[in-house]
Length: 231
Ligand SMILES: NC(=O)c1ccc[n+]([C@@H]2O[C@H](COP(=O)([O-])OP(=O)(O)OC[C@H]3O[C@@H](n4cnc5c(N)ncnc54)[C@H](OP(=O)(O)O)[C@@H]3O)[C@@H](O)[C@H]2O)c1
Image 1 (cartoon, rainbow, N blue to C red):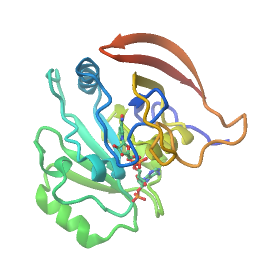
Image 2 (image 1 turned 120 degrees about the horizontal axis):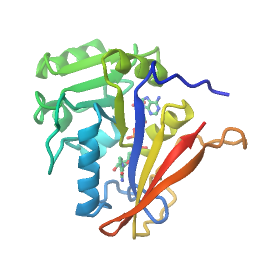
Image 3 (image 1 turned 90 degrees about the vertical axis):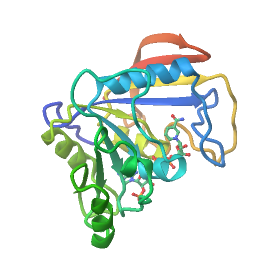
Image 4 (image 1 turned 120 degrees about the vertical axis):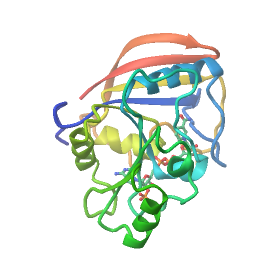
């Protein structure tokens, strides 16, 4: 059994996703708009309540999101964009490295394997607002070490916004506390289309993660389900 970290060692984590009725978060070709405007407002309100948004590098490469706040203003503190990228594959022109970087500083979590030259090129963009932290020897980022590092930076609450591969690893490491799933009334299909939770999957009954439904609401055309994880 994987041992979890206490909340005094890691940030509280809410996993939020928008998916189709059949559990897809993208088509076989990649990004698709699943959320209604009302649901986006719910997500942006949630972004105001956290210290950081965490996403995997494939999401950055495929969607180039800005990971900013629209519609609302944060009351205090900065919102960090946190990217998990084992080998620093991040494109230098990515929005998370260039768009409103003073307002939304970016932290890239990588491994000891990542090339030093790429690190220098990334930091050259804005050394004051971009930070690179190496967590583990790879091949992938050590997510527990990442969680401890984020906590030490006073990042106490994070919003995990996918994709499916990182969602699975975060759950497998017992680093997620809540799940909010917006189910959009679409059917996408395609066995190679990314689902909400990817990774190698759990096999034994005692590994399967259980959750309690704590709330449900309609946000435009999306049904949003709120769950608390039971580890
Ligand atoms: N509808 C939605 O709400 C939503 C939200 C987000 C994304 N998406 C979609 O999801 C798709 C991307 O999802 P994805 O599953 O392919 O990728 P992802 O979760 O965005 O990124 C996964 C990558 O992160 C890196 N990584 C580093 N350490 C890791 C660790 N310990 N565990 C897991 N990953 C680690 C790995 O790449 P390296 O080995 O190179 O580091 C891994 O392949 C896109 O098509 C995007 O449009 C949809």
